[in-house]
Amino acid sequence: MTTAGAPGRGRPRGGPRLSAADLAFAAAFAVYAAYTLAVLASGLVAAAAGIWPSLHETLHLWELRPTLVGRAAGAMADAAHHTVPLAVVDYAFSAFNLGLAGFLLWLRPRDRTARLLAVAMTGTAAVFNLQAYGVYQELTPTTLDTVAHSVFGVLAATSYVLALLLFPDGRLVPRWSRWRLLALYVPVSVAVVAAVLGIQSTSRTVALIIVFGLLTPAVGVAAQAYRYRRAVGTVERQQSRLLFWALVPALLIGLFVLSRGINASAFSAFEGRSIAIIPVALFRVFQAAFGIIPIALFIGLLRFRLWDIDRVLNRAFVYGALAGFVGLVYVAVVVGVGRLVGSQGDNIVLSIAATGLVAVAFEPVRERVQVVANRLVYGHRATPYEVLSSFSTRMADELATEERLAGMARLLAEGTAARRADVWLVVAGELRHAASWPHDETSPAQAFPLAGEELPSLGPVTGCEPVRHHGEVLGALSVTKPGSET
Image 1 (cartoon, rainbow, N blue to C red):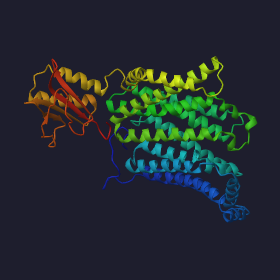
Image 2: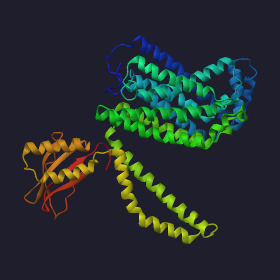
Image 3: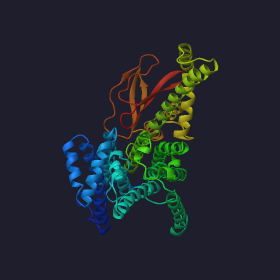
Image 4: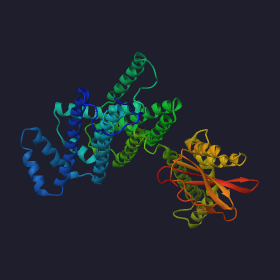
């Protein structure tokens, strides 16, 4: 069995035979996935029955049968009277999770964390589908139905929590002995289960929000923060940071919902109430949050474009903070000042004042936010572009030899996490390629004429920085990042 942190591939030709444990997991997962598909199909049938009266009548006829099919048909017929708005969003979310789970299992069939994540995504495909869940709310369940449904949800939640704890190397943290880990995790697990079960007269909906919206991301954030602080390698640190920031939105949403009093619905006044009691908007928000988490785990498990995550996170911080700044200024000026001066309704003068204030303060705020974002994303190390700029300054004082230039190209590529780095020298008024990393046969042979102090276009590179000495351009450094980032 490979660990999550080890590089892996899809199922290789002529690979090792499936073990008994592999076959057992495959059988169990097939049953679990079949249950999920049955739940999702019931929601689709209910939606269709709301459109076609003939199907609705057929379901009521089947309801007369004293079997599981009869009870399910009756539940679908009743659910057809209140089809959930935007049901297409539910099924898009479910299809996304199921597709990602299947693809991940195909790529990492024996990876423990990948298996757990596949089970978790398969479960949440049904758990967060409002249309399908509405059918269950109309069902009069037997003891067996209740047990099966509860086990289904528990498996989804437990798999998610374990996947977040084991990511990325497949081992629990801290790095303690087995008995010490048991002494840590068993009491915590018992306390959490007791707390969830101790919510008196809660609705299943609220329990799902507490478990999936608060407990799961909280465990993941704590585990990945611990791993990031103690990561032994750069890749593991990147993986932990990626998942940490993917979990933060889900945790913040859970805390926001809790602070707004959703936990109050755990009391007896909500006993037996319909799912409609809980605002639908909350589920839509959680769907988005639980779309981010599997993507982050998927990228981390495959080590796919890990080095692009820095810039994506950086831009997300900057743009999000600037959007918040614009909204805050508008509210402060138009609403706050409007109340102070007794203005009622829209005030064009205050709107213009807010726009002007944003225009004046935007660039200073952007620069300050960029500094904060760099600190959050890159920590105490320089950004790739700070490395590029400072490296070009130091290079101006170095004696250029072929071996040293190749070493500089390699150092530049590793320091900026670039896919390729090139060193250029000015010769007879032209910018000529001198070295690159990694070495290949595709180094550009073309010379680019210099026009004054400005560098010419060097082709499809991500960044370029001139090398100057006392104001004179001696050469240039260029880097090409992975993918299409610019």
